[in-house]
Image 1: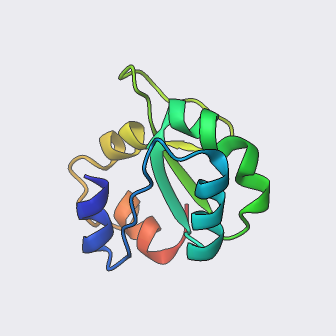
Image 2: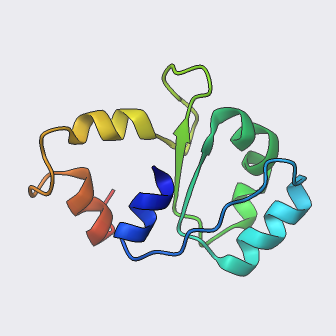
Length: 105
């Protein structure tokens, strides 16, 4: 889902192998300067949360909770909640797609 959305938005998709430690992830995120990261709550806590202050280009972190519940982590957005809020609004003025494309979260 994240890959298809990235391609549709004309972005660059770069998967990060979950077995990477925090240092290789920091190196890739520093070099790539992403604006958005899609990850799980567990991987975010384990690998990215401590690095977040050193990644100035990272504007949005979209979280999917591994247990299927709500992802409620400070400084992140729950991807399931965002998608549920967008149901039935494919591109209207208040939709997530419009805010995403215009850079207004």
